[in-house]
Image (cartoon, rainbow, N blue to C red; front, side, top):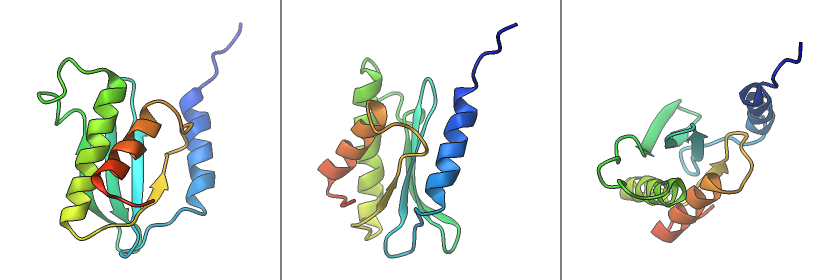
Length: 120
C-alpha cells in the first residue's frame, strides 16, 4: 500500500529549522504567516515577552473580502496586519513565512504589508 506524504509535517520541520534563526524582539517583532486551505492568518509577535502585538486574518475579514480571490484576500490581510502594527509604533519586522514557499498567498501577504509601510 502506498502511503500519502504528509506535507504539513514536512512544513512543520522546515518551520522549526527557520525558527532557530528567526526571532522577534520588541523593537523588531516577528511577522508570522499561517496559511490554511481556506483562510490566511498573520500575527506580529514579540518572542522575548511571548506576546502577540497585532494580528489579522481572512476569517474575521470575510465580509470585506467576499468575492475576492485567495491571493487578493492575502494581500488585504497583510495590509490590515501592517496597519495594526503601525498603530502600535512598529515599523520594522522580521518576516517568518512559516515553512511555506515564498510564492502565491505568502508573497501577497508580504507585498500587502510593504504597501502599508512596514519594512522587512
